[in-house]
Image 1 (cartoon, rainbow, N blue to C red):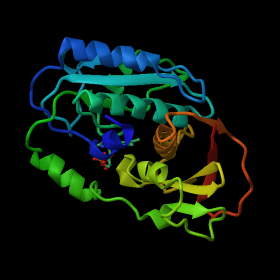
Image 2: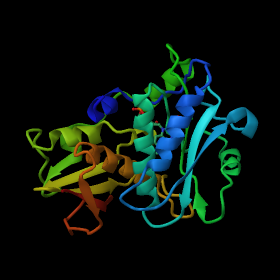
Image 3: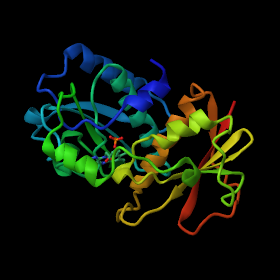
Image 4: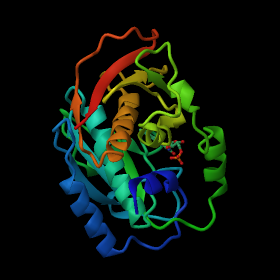
Length: 265
Ligand SMILES: Cc1cc2nc3c(=O)[nH]c(=O)nc-3n(C[C@H](O)[C@H](O)[C@H](O)COP(=O)(O)O)c2cc1C
């Protein structure tokens, strides 16, 4: 299945059918996770966790006891690196018919961090349940989706720009499909903080910052969303892009910050 189809099909799954994750699926997912590299070159340690054995819980998930989590060193750009890698895993799971949900908040974080043996200089940004989607969503899941308008995304012209933030990009652009893949990405509270300025073969990624996403230690959850957006864009080029962090110095709105540039090879 092509990546665009996977991106179009994926949704957060919070209601599972109660069947345990098959050992061969667990094995494939863990092996795949361990093979993931990111343009930021920050290693991630992955673990499959068992909610019963490890005493884990998430109030929004029903019908599975299996979770996957990753941890990495707190370093500049760890957020984007994690977003890029975890989304790659999420889409691989989708290709196997396995449901996932990015979870950064609605979980017993202390229990997950203990199960991950998190050290002082490490961060475990998000976890995901793994299992087979139930035919029908729980009432809570349906309500949650409504609450964040999970089935809708901002318009193309609100997110993407032509060489300057003053000019919205026309949908006739040659990179329409790559940007459409960005537009459909998942994000925390469905805020879709990515803004992209396209200039010839370069795409400058920016973060439109909302209040309440940066913690006391400076960890910025919306930069994880930016990592997801970078991965979706890179997918359109089979990851034949390279990343550079070099602010082009464009004039940007006050709450919009430069994050990274992707350049088609
Ligand atoms: C970084 C990140 C953190 C998230 N944290 C949570 C969470 O704590 N709980 C939850 O139920 N969903 C969480 N989500 C899922 C989003 O709410 C969801 O992706 C968004 O509403 C769009 O819906 P969709 O994934 O079905 O397309 C998170 C998503 C991302 C990308």
